[in-house]
Structures are given as C-alpha cells and as structure tokens.
Picture (spheres, rainbow, N blue to C red):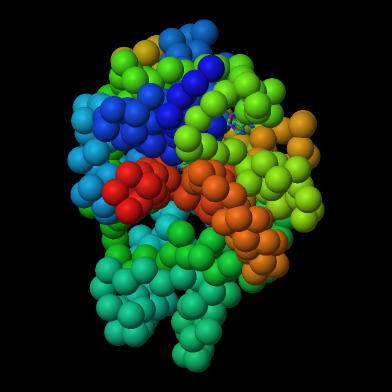
Length: 372
Ligand code: FAD
Ligand code: UDP
C-alpha cells in the first residue's frame, strides 16, 4: 500500500488532518484499530433508536471562530446549552457552582453576604477556580471555598482520578470554576451546539474525499513495514508507539453503563453529577443533548471511573500532573529525533484536549507541515 500521508487514528484529530491534506492533493491513508470512525466522539443509534455516545457524553463548545467555521463545513448544528446539576446535601444545584447554587444551599442572609463579597472581590461574571478561592484570606469566602471544595470537588475528583484535587494540575479543577453569576450553563463559550446528525456523520463527511482511504480494524503495529508513505501522523498513545521504553504514561479509564428506561424523561437536565454518593460520577440523558424529545423512552449512561490497564480498557484521560509531564517530555524528545513522523491528539500529545482543541491542534499541525 502507498500513500503520501499515513494517519493512525480516525478520531477528530486524524479526520481533520486527513481532510486538510486531501484538500491539497495528497493521497491519505487513515487507519484505525476500532471498527468505526470518529474516535471517542463516536455516536450511534442504540437498539431503541436513541442517539448515544459510546465513549461518554460529548458536548461541543468553543471560543475559536476558526474551529467553528471549519467544522461547520461538514455539519449543520443543533443549538444546545449543556446544563448540569450536582447533588449536594440532598439538593440538585447548578454546576459549575454559581450564585443560584449558593441560594439553594445557604440561608438567605448568609447567601446575600457571600454574593456581595464574591462580586466585590472578583466581579460579576468572574470564573474562580476552587483551588484559587481556597487561598482567600476573608473568613466568609474561606468558609465558602471549604464547603464547595468538600461537597463538589473532593469526592468527585477522588472517584474520577483516584486523587485529591491538589495532587492534579490546577488546570483540571479549573475547568469547572465557581461562577460569580446566575448563568447556569456548564460552558460559557461563544459557540455551543451539537452536530445535527451526530459526530459520526460529521466525521464521515470529513473523510469523504476521493483522496482519502480509510482502513478500519487495522492496528498500525500490524501494518508497519507494509505501507509506504512520506509522512506518518500518529494520534494513538505516544508511549505505546515507543513500546513503553521509558515506562507507561498514566491514563485514567472509565466504564460506561447504558440503560434504556420506559419513560420519556429521566432527569431535568443533560447531566446530573454525584460528587458525594454512588460509585459513578455522573448520569447523562442523551435526549437532552440530541433533541430526540419525541421518543417515548430514554437512554442514560452512568460513568464509573477506573484504573487504566493496557489491553483491557481504554486510555480515556491523560492525567495532568508534573511528573507525568516530565515522562511525556522524554517521549517527545524521542519523537523529535524521527524524520517524517508527527504526533497529535489527546493521546499523541498526552493532553487533556476538548474536541475543539484537538481540531485546533490538527489545523495548526497541518499548516506547519504543508506551508511551514
Ligand atoms: P481519539 O478520539 O481518542 O482518537 C484516536 C483514535 O486512534 C482512536 O479511534 C483509536 O482507536 C485510534 N488508535 C490508537 N492507537 C492506534 C493504533 N496503534 N492503530 C490504529 N488506530 C489506533 N470533548 C469535548 O469537547 N466535549 C465533551 O463533552 C467531551 N466529553 C468527553 C467525555 C469523555 C468520557 C472522554 C473520554 C472525552 C471527552 N471529550 C470531550 C474529549 C474528546 O473525546 C477528545 O478531545 C477527542 O475525541 C480527541 O480526538 P482524537 O482524535 O485526538 O483522539
Ligand atoms: N469536578 C468536580 N466536581 C464536579 C465537576 C467537576 O470535582 O461536579 C472536577 C473533577 O476533578 C473533574 C474536573 O473537575 O474531573 C473536570 O470536569 P469536567 O466536567 O470538565 O470533566 P470531563 O467532562 O472532561 O470528564
């Protein structure tokens, strides 16, 4: 087999790079060891006709006009603002924890005082990471930070990562800051929507180019030596590529339990988080995301975090921590020695990318390689 560019991985990173190289006349071969395209963003209709995300709920959000316009060439969008409730002290309150959560959990006079202090200290609309709030000197804000830390972050993070928030890069918990606002949306990005026919349909369009050939159920290891190409772009785990020679990079995995219920709706919003009870972290009801409100039944997914064991489950989350970054850098140094081989994506770059960041990174790499 021959091609100008061999891309390992048919996820959003691989699909973006394939589409871009094909558009400038290169012949591209995309291989993926799974039996489908779209990587972890893969969605499909279950036996009951509900559009579900096999690898966990995926909600698209970005501040990048470039990424938004790029993907809009391959899909129409369904406007959707994701909302999340967290169960705290037996009440469902908005997550990220916001001024409304404060009012639902604290007596009115104390809530007034805390709101006033938060607005004065950070400004209305501010996004304050919990680990930042914990450093506040003011006694009342300190009390609030300890409450939110204990009730929203600690149990959830212990479940999700097997670690305390302070043992991870602060960027992890900063993804869900305390919001000095009554905005109860999970994300505040400029563009928020779901691909009208789903992610798989969008990626299929990206890959539908006469210059692109896709080979599924094909592990790159088995093809090595059989395919000739000028450039190899690898979007699988970088440590696996190098045979784990410096030791395995840590990842966190999940197992998903899907359940279809004979009722039109199961919960009030797309996702309900359980920081303090149950072995699962959150429950997502797909119909909220996809707009299939007309169906008489509904499908939900429970997420159970677990250790990653190569060969047994999937490396869903790189674990952002200084020592892991140092190990990744050793692999990156190896990567720089190779000619014509490039790494990208959540696993190739060992970065906790959202979908838009994966696409942005792929667009940038293409520009570097094609015109750089
Ligand atoms: P992937 O989608 O992982 O694709 C990599 C592909 O490479 C895989 O298909 C794999 O089979 C293939 N591969 C690996 N090694 C080999 C090999 N040796 N040979 C052949 N093929 C190989 N992002 C958001 O923006 N919003 C969300 O709501 C969101 N929710 C998420 C929820 C969960 C539970 C998870 C795990 C992720 C979520 N993400 C979300 C992140 C999103 O999944 C990623 O940003 C995106 O899918 C990254 O795309 P990728 O192409 O880099 O990687
Ligand atoms: N988090 C938490 N409680 C919550 C929501 C999030 O402690 O109710 C923390 C937790 O550490 C989680 C991180 O914030 O892993 C990022 O959350 P996000 O929802 O962005 O995670 P993802 O959707 O990527 O799994």
